[in-house]
Amino acid sequence: MNDKVDAGEVYVQGFAKGIDLNKHNYSFIGHKAIYDSLGEVGIFLQQLEEGTHKTLPERSATPNYYTYPGLTQYVSMRKKLKKYLTNNK
Image (cartoon, rainbow, N blue to C red; front, side):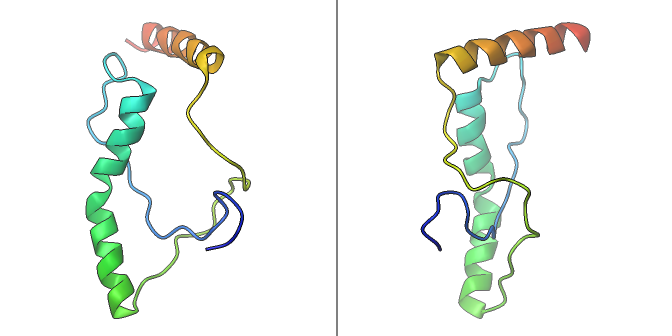
């Protein structure tokens, strides 16, 4: 742990599974990613207790505060998604 937001070491990173961009919005996807990663979290906790845990390779993200988009960003994302889905049927 350190005193910077989103700047510490990464031990677990999972992915949302079974996402349908026509049905699921960003909020659902974000929460589903957490839920779908619980297996990896369990493995990490076991490794932590055993002293065998390791960090994931360094990521290229800058230390910052990441949050859900505001209304303007949400509308922009939906427009881009609609265009993407139309072009990739």
